[in-house]
Image 1 (cartoon, rainbow, N blue to C red):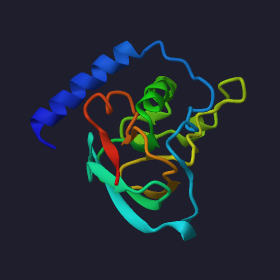
Image 2: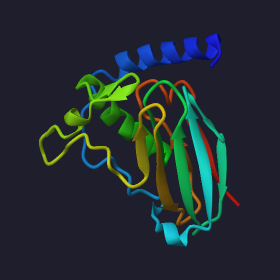
Image 3: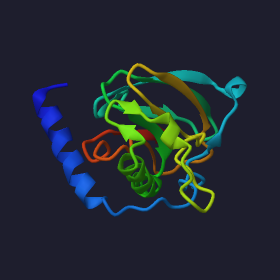
Image 4: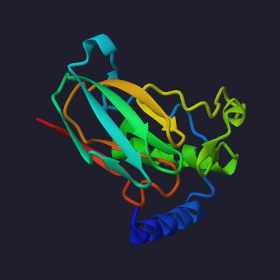
Length: 177
């Protein structure tokens, strides 16, 4: 990562920490909107490797067909904790507040996760487990899979909602063909 990109990321993170400091942990991550649904690995038409670096993805865009099931192999090649989350821009905006709570409570600590804190009861049946089927949260060097069926055309993107990362440009487009 170039010094310029690092500086932009640092500024974006500090601005977002201030702006989102009063965030609350809402209900259910809001992942059921028109972004698709969990798929079965046996139904996947192909696998796409997504590498996460410090504040960008490779590839930056993914082409899909309506109804297609894709197996994403997500690898964190950066030095910070990163997320791969499939959703609409509104879903990402709502989820960013929840991710801020994870930082505020010490779950996300730069380049590592406090797994014990992820079990913390936030009230109203909520925790910080981050176990939604459209998303993975990875420490540096980790890899996991997301299998997703894109049910219909829509405004869908993949993004890292760790505070400051989306604002620094860590999101990509899902294009339908």
